[in-house]
Amino acid sequence: MVEASEEHESISNLLKSIDELNKEKQQIISIVSHDIKAPLNRIYALVQLLHMGSETLTTEQQQYLDKIHQVVADGLSMIRNLVDYRNIEYRGIDLHLEEINIKTFVQTTVRNFKSLADKKNINISLDANEDAIVFSDNQCLGRVADSLISNAIKFSNEGKDVYVVVKNKETCVLITVKDQARGFTNEDLPKLFTKFQKLSSKPTSGESSTGLGLFVAKRFLDRIGGTIECSTQEGLGSAFTITLPKKFHV
Image (cartoon, rainbow, N blue to C red; front, side, top):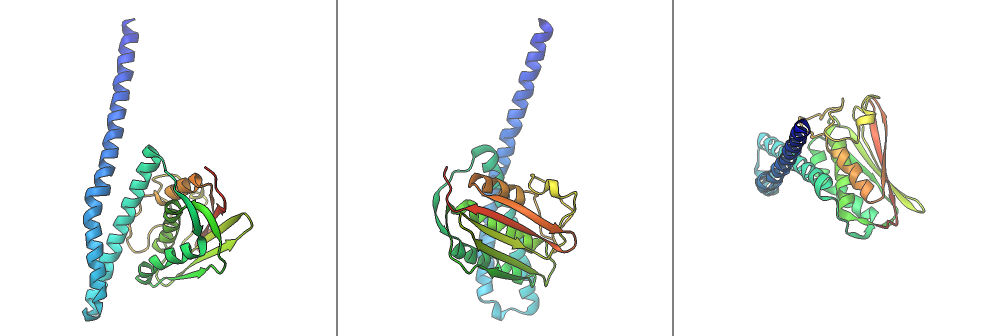
């Protein structure tokens, strides 16, 4: 009986320690998402203001400003991934369903990444000729699109192309993001959508990677009834295709 009591106490202490570690992890992510995100947002806003008067800057000053912009955008992207991870793991994903015009949605998303792509001399080509309406969550879909386009730019060398193609089907919409990056190895493929994975392909301009982007995208798509597939050829690039139902019921 004494041994059983000691074993029960040991298990109880272990569970308590695990619970404390989980609370500490959530607290750290909360600090990152609020206390670090705020100054980065201020720096980002100042960089935007400086860009408005960039005609008075020298070429060297403009290069430094572009680098600051890239670093801050990279840091904010990492924080968003950590916050999304916390919400997925501990809070769940609340949906706010609405009608979304995919053509307009994708045009806006691509436009938001143009300045970041320009800094690496990467051209984003968009093929979205048809209007297509889906009933989905704009924020979830936005985070998926942001992750895929951001990765395509991050892992591509300067001077390459990124293609975004929208296809309107009878019951669904397909959105494909194709790059000319290094692609993935056969060893990478089973790990693509798992968290905190470091794959063989690396960012090409010193950008950071949490290993959470594709994991977050997959979990958001699962929540809104979508799917994602990757076709890749090592050394030539990858294409990620989202299949999004036009009608989604909770």
